[in-house]
Every structure is written in C-alpha cells, then in structure tokens.
Length: 312
Image 1 (cartoon, one colour):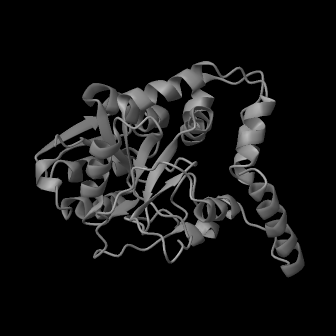
Image 2 (cartoon, helix red, strand yellow; image 1 turned 90 degrees about the vertical axis):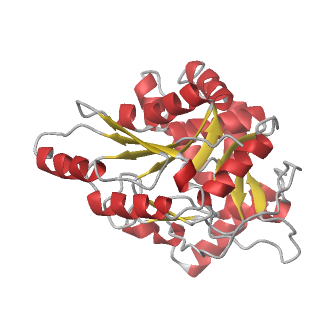
C-alpha cells in the first residue's frame, strides 16, 4: 500500500503544534510516511512567534521525510484549504490536519486503510478520524459508520473527490437552490444557517474557500456521498481553548478524548446511512448551543427529530 502524504497547517500555536507532531510521530506508520508542514507567513506583530515556530520546525523528525513549506506572506486560505487541495492534487491522495489535532497511534493506519479500501467506492467522499458525541447501537457490528456531514478534523481524501467539490464550488451562483436547501435542512439544522450565509450575490471564490468544509458537505449531499468515520474518535481537538478560529470554549462537548487501545479493523463496504446513527448526527447542534430551558430544549429536539425522521 502506498501511504498518503500527511499535511499539517500551522501559524503561531507552537505548543499546540508540538502536541500534534509528537502524537503523529507516535503513530505506527509515522516512519514510513512523508509529512508536509505548511507555515503561514506572519501578520504585523507576529514575526517573532512565527520565527520561533519555524525554528522548531527545523528540528522535526521521526518521519520518512519532512517537507517544510514556509509561506512568505500571511494567507490563511492559501496555507490551509489550498495547501490541502494542492497536496491531494500532486499525490493523488492526502491526509490533512490543523495544528490542534492530537491523533491516536492508529490514526494514520486507519486513514490509509480507508483510502485504500474506499478509493473505488463512488459513495465515499472522505475518511475522517473524528467521532461525534453519539452512541452507536449495541448490536452495530462495525468499527466505522457513514456520515452525510464532512468533518475536516484529521481527514484523508483523493484528488478526484476534490474535483467533485470544485464542480460544486465553481457552479455556486449565490442564489438559493430550494432543492439543495431542503436536503441540507434535513441533514442538519445548523447546516441550513451556514448555507444561507453563502447565498448572496457578491459571493466570491475566497468566501467559498473559507467555508470549504461546508462546500464539501454540499458536494456530498448533491452527489449522495458520505464520509467514513470511526466508532470511537481517533483524534482529539485541543483547539477548544479560545485559540481556534472556528472553535471556542463553549463547544467543548465536541472535544473527544482518544482511547489509544482502539484500533479499528472492521470496515463496512455497505456505504449507506444507518437510521439510528444518522438521526443522532442530525440532532447534534453543530457549533451552536440549543435552548437551555428544559421545555424549549425538549421542543427543539422533538422538532428536529420529527423533521429528520420524515426526511429518511
């Protein structure tokens, strides 16, 4: 099996990055894998922090080969989303994570096995290392399940899947598509809010690139594709400390811990949504807090449950 290259994007969070790199080095396939580290250029005032981080990058070892990509100017989109796209485009496939993702020792093995197993499966968009705070049925026999929502927290995918996403991105007019809006609504309530934020006349390619995880989900919905996730999380997001751009201290219910003994080996080739799992994914209020009142929360969950049940 040809291993996928690993991409890590970073800026000034040196302590986070050290934890991310140390965890990757402890992976079973680390010494056989090449890693590309994308360091964004400094904004005014951050020069010393960026230089300190880059001094550390020169010491990184424990991989087959370490490639440093030191961006001359600050451009988060170029250093993150575009870096992921280019890595997958150049190598045919890639594994990508940000500098606040701490991985299980079996993360690289799982993603590479998934990339090998599902490459020819037209229903699979990506392989992710995160498991949402859900409970799988007791009789569920596999170590993986399929989700209609893309998760960028430690993900592997292929060049041709990016091409599908690019088709959706390039065709994005900014006008609301009622059919797509309905499908998005029944995939997740918070997703509809995010979709509406991108339905405007002055939408730009940069706007879509900044929301690339959502555009991935939209492409999955339009192409009836899923992402493969492990039944126990193989990554821990340590960015819920106020340092992350998209995560904050209120989102800690999504911060899963890693059980280093869990090694997923039971894969399923039946790329379909399990109703009970899909229902729980729908009920998750991704990156937004549901009503705190017991009555309002009960009504909120009932409304979402009924809307999702009748959409299946």
